[in-house]
Image (cartoon, rainbow, N blue to C red):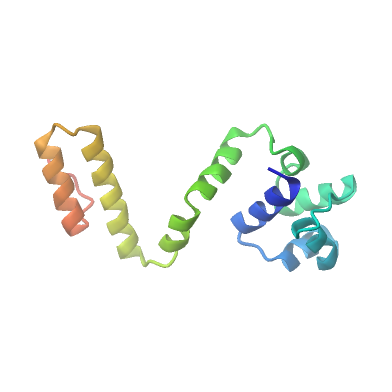
Length: 136
C-alpha cells in the first residue's frame, strides 16, 4: 500500500475532510491534494511529520504502513474489511443496532455449537425477536 492510500484511508477512517487535515497540518489544501490525488506525490519529510501529527499517527505508519502498534493497524485493517457494513450501521437507530447485534451473536453461537439444538433454537428466537437475553 502506498503513502497516498494510507493517507487517504486514515483521513476517511477518522471521518475528516481534506481541508480539516490541511488546516491541522498547517499546509494548503492544494498541497494536500497533490499527496492524495493521482499525482501521488510523496511529501518532504517535514510535511509528512505534520500530516502524521495532524492525524495522530506515526510518520512511519504513513510512509511504510508499520507503526509498531498492532492494535491500531488491526483496527484499520478491520475498518477496511467491514467499511460497507460500518457505513450501513451508522444509518441505523439504537434499537436496530441492538437487533443486528443480537442477530450476529446468535449466528456466532449457532456456528460455535452446530450440533446443539437448544442453542440453535435460541439463535432462531433472537433472530426473530432481536432479543439479546440468553435463553437459558
